[in-house]
Length: 243
Length: 130
Picture 1 (cartoon, one colour):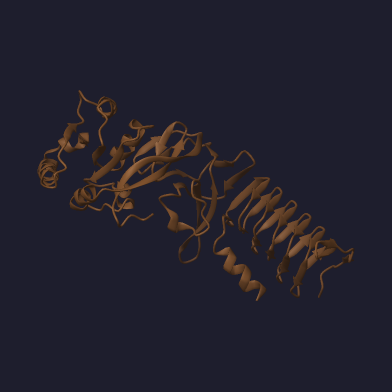
Picture 2 (picture 1 turned 90 degrees about the vertical axis):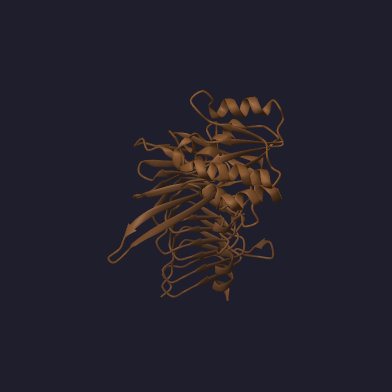
């Protein structure tokens, strides 16, 4: 049995038509199931928690990065397969999974290609793809052995290497990759100096109160302890996934 | 040939410390390491080490092979080949299996050459071999 959770922003009138199309398409594919709409009286976590009691085969969220991030945090420690149908903007996660639009998403659900993935943990919160923070005032403590401090403005990007294997050939799976990008002004154009470290345990402090942005959606305050949770979720992916 | 072999390996560097980054503490790794920034602390890796022109390392260094173009203030132990390019500066003792130095490279310290797992006391002091 499939359970479908429609995010709160899909109550807007402009999404009425596409939501109806999704419901029709899923019925056509024989994938109909229970539909839940997040609203003022039914929050995301309570829907997932109640639904998990019935042991659904698959939970699919209809929404964006933020919706999928909420799902993995609400469904922590369960054996159910997860999926996403991307709608609107901010859908980089779905693209990473090889799902670019609604039509592809429905076909991907029908094909049901499942991959088990690691997730990154920041304190007690999970993220699928990446966590970013401003360089300024940021100090990275790696495995309690050494610290790394960027000298200049830029951004630090902590990525789940399971989903970003193409960025560096020497990656160790089951670890996090830390990209430290520092902007360097040149006469004609700006250059970015990039450093890369991979590890499975880091602590990041920020002295200027910048926050982390997880999966381009959720904000978390530093200091943050990062780690990796291996084989955390089974996720339905498209054949054009990047990992 | 030596340089080409090293460059091929460094395409798969496990860690890259860029020129705009400062590292403090002891770094222990398994894979290849590229350093272009400032490191204050010991470095130990089972892989290869590349120290760029802008790099400045203040600590002891231990690696499998190394290509040095920057500055190291500390003792260096290399299990295999050490290549020092024209801008390389090492202020400390070195222990290597084979050594290649370009004109202009600076080595201020004791040099011990290891052969077939036996350390020979082929020590010599080299100062700016111009």
